[in-house]
Amino acid sequence: MKPLLALEDIRMVYQARKGLFGFVPITALDGVSLSLAEGETVAIVGESGSGKTTLARVSLRLLRPTSGQVLFDGTDIARLPEGRLKWFRQQAQGIFQDPFSSLDPFMRVFDTVEEPLIIHRIGDRERRRELVYQALEEVRLIPVKEFALKFPHQLSGGQRQRVAIARCLVLRSRLIVADEPVSLLDASSRAEILSLFRELQHRHKLTFIYITHDLSTARQFAPRIAIMYRGKIVETGPTSQVITHPQHPYTRALLEAVPQPDPSNRFRERRVGFQETARE
Amino acid sequence: MPLLEVEGLKLRYQGASGEVRAVDGVSFSVEAGAALGLVGESGSGKSSVALALMRLRPRNVAHFSGRVLLNGVECSRLDEGEFRRHFRWEKLAMVFQGAMESFNPVLKVGEQIIEPLLQRRMGRKEAEKQSMALLDAVLLPARTFDRYPHELSGGMKQRALIAMALVLHPQLLILDEPTSALDVIVQAEVMNLLKRLKRELSLGILFITHDIALSSDLCDRIAVMYAGELVETGGADGVLLQPGHPYTQKLLAAVPRLMEEKEPEFISGSPPDLTNPPPGCRFHPRCPYVFDRCRVESPPPFPANEHRARCWLLLR
View 1 (cartoon, chains in turn purple, blue):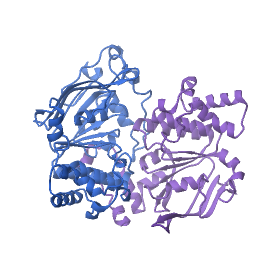
View 2: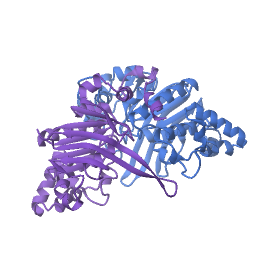
View 3: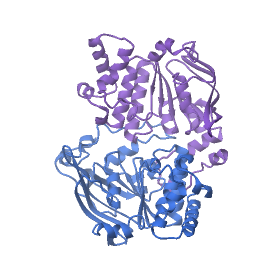
View 4: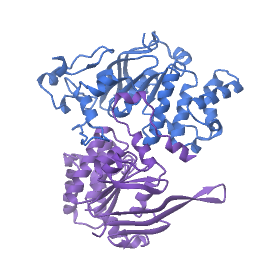
């Protein structure tokens, strides 16, 4: 089957400033290839600095890679000029880590969710209202009419993240890239948002890239997993297999680090030392 | 005698639409060399408890009462000058939530660590020597002293903050979500460090977190907070393996499991508005086992030292 999204040998090199005139190249992505069939969910797991956020941004063409192709539905979007990307902007959406900064504090929920429809010239006023209410209902911001009138500061973290999800749904996007969407939420809202993701994913056959540093939520949500370390995918495979039979030492360190409620934890040190030696 | 004893702590803020009962009659104790986890959702009042203990209450406090005893001294009764001179930072210290962003960006990390020592008229040489020992204790290289905050990674900043809190050798360390901005591996490293410090310095620790799984990494006892009240307190084994209160059970069920094929559950509904908390048990609107009594009568608070859950199901 033809993949919906195929990243092919992506390299991303940033120029970091050094001193007054100098620059040093920093390789954030070092030959990453990944492909997703329509309706598939992949979790990208790694620590901060591993390049996972850069990968998210490249997949959404918020960044142009230094080299490599980003094929969306067969078209290389890495090289298209912004003016010819509107169709892609409608079909691919991002959800970001911090729902406190990703929503405009001066816009009501209704306007936030309606805005993409206006930009993409979908429907008239009546139709748009219908679509917005429908999306809010799908993310269970109920009663819809009440939530539509609220401002972001009146919402909890979980509720804000649902507004962000509604904003993706309203365009009937096919690809959603969620970058640490639940890492700032507490356990209950985290479980709730992930179960909502799964439900929407099934209902709309969404293709999902779920980016996280936490293997336990990755396991909960994604059947396939890719472990990133220092700009490379170091291990990939079915989630249950990666978790039960990790191959790469970094994957083992990630597994060792996941907090689980076990009272004997307080008597043992977690063996995550792999990384300290690697970093020096 | 426990290191810290808190009895009937109440803290209310003046909000726009009435008094917010952020902490409503909370009692617990922390033993020297032991860690108590204070666990609850955001908005449950955990951080307010910490600020009340440090006597760093915001200006809009409408009501404050309760007893706080440190080593048997009722420090809630002391006047501010006394508390500042002999208690805050000296006997109890705190690492604040989000403190990684609150370093002074133009001052070397070491200078920020030795500031309180210099304030207390210690010679500079001696202060530097002590801070080197501290950096070593939190597993930071000595050269960190001359680094600026922006040169440190998140994990290093958190270690430096712990060093800052320990500079006057407090007996009690309050940690408010110390790892929430860190990724899992760095978090595990910080937890390893805290375990070691607790053991080696026989520190009493109050560990505040929304993550009950993480609390198991450090805490000997766990207190679960909901809507300004403690709903369950007990040894880590009891609370984690045989949780009594439905809220604790739900919190545990919400933790995504790594090795079990078990879907995490979530708690439907949202925490109550604390200007007008529900009558009876505050968890009753979200509780799956609710019955008539829960709606009208609040289960009585319990003494701090046993494993107890504040729930009518268990008190019947």
